[in-house]
Image 1 (cartoon, rainbow, N blue to C red):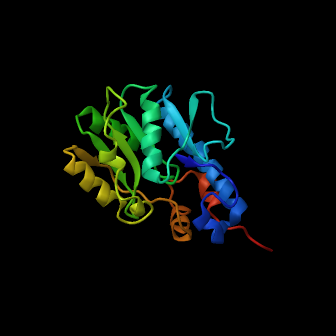
Image 2 (cartoon, one colour):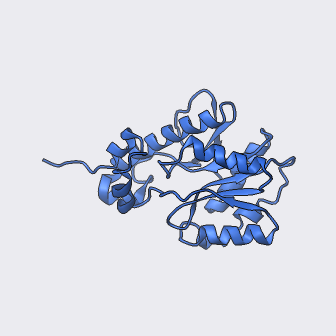
Length: 214
């Protein structure tokens, strides 16, 4: 799941630090980095769901494009998962591009928990959201994704997303598991922390540093 790297529309909360063009360059690199990571985990089954759906964004030959559809993030993720399930059998991992410390080990750990019988795996973000949601193998696209993504639409983007999602999943009788928390890249404060994190790819860390004006 990714917002297209359009100046003025991508990573807008970072604009005071990086400016619209800097945010667009950062988003483009985050997409490239995340696609490379996803392809390592699922070489033949990686999808890029873009917002807006008609955005022109180059993708590697092995990545299939989807357009995001829906009025809020929960609806867009649900729609993307249903699109994937029409073409794919097996577990589905939904990730964004905002967690540059996400690793192949995290993706494999999530898949292992799904193999062990957990219905849903969440990767908590330190801001109260989540950077990953994994869904166990389903035999039909008619699965009730509302039990995962059907929280109050007004909560998306706020600090209560994970708690509300877990409560909804537990009410539906789904067996859930959590990965370790990671920091999302949303604000200038996040950028300053992640720019110093050795696990962040160097090209992304460099893009997080504000331009120097001589």
